[in-house]
Image 1 (spheres, rainbow, N blue to C red):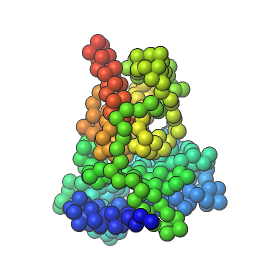
Image 2: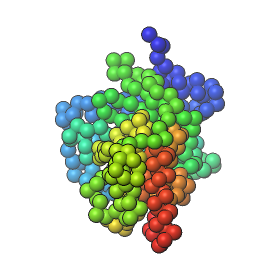
Image 3: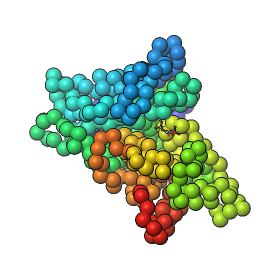
Image 4: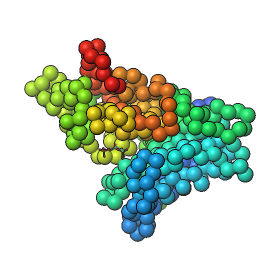
Length: 343
Ligand code: P6P
């Protein structure tokens, strides 16, 4: 039997090679522990007593699920005492959450979507936790503010997600490729299942919510039309469409076997700047995609170059297999050359 490499062994060896420091290793270990706890809770379904609505509206204006709140609070509490973070930002909190005064403040900032796709919880579809790690710019020990989080995604030192599906998996990168770990529930430990994941350059799978077709701007409409034309169209091959309604599930499939994920700015979401959040959904996924040899854009620009203006800023996204994302970008460029076009 091939000796299995545990997450702890993998991270300790990576630290020994200088790929990450002790505080970042601790952060990833803590996130892995919270993901394990969430996986156990989620697997209990209604018997965990936390299905349904939390009767609270979050900063996004969305009805919170009880499990959103449980996941949010679990991650805050688990990361408060270790001395590795200076503050946290969560989809479920209007403001940044500083580390409590009684604990030391560390060199990193954590941003997270505690339970992405939570509307799928009650119907037993895969959901996930997405996280992003930035350096704390305040080396004087002062309390970070929202402005300290407004760093472009290229400044991320690590990112990843846990996916709670038929198998619970943790996918992380700290800048040296993308690695997947699978939870062995009997051992209660994570073991390396894929090292240095690579997104295939080409694909025949695309992900977009086709119900919004009437809102799409022409670059997206023209690109999707081409894919739907299949082998009779200009691409001369058939494509298939997948849309889970949970970004972590769609992106895990794309990281594993290729694909392109689109959630573009359209006439419906233009006023908000898109649907997905830049800092704790788009940027961490874009970091992973680029580390796995893919491409991640807002239509034209590289997502990781965008300088955030606000903590919960939204953005249009297209990411995945390089050939397809470049093809889509060519439609945006053609359009912007012919007429001014909102990004
Ligand atoms: P729609 C979940 O709410 C989410 O933020 C992503 O996980 C998912 O890809 C997207 O929104 C689904 O959006 O408009 O299809 O419900």
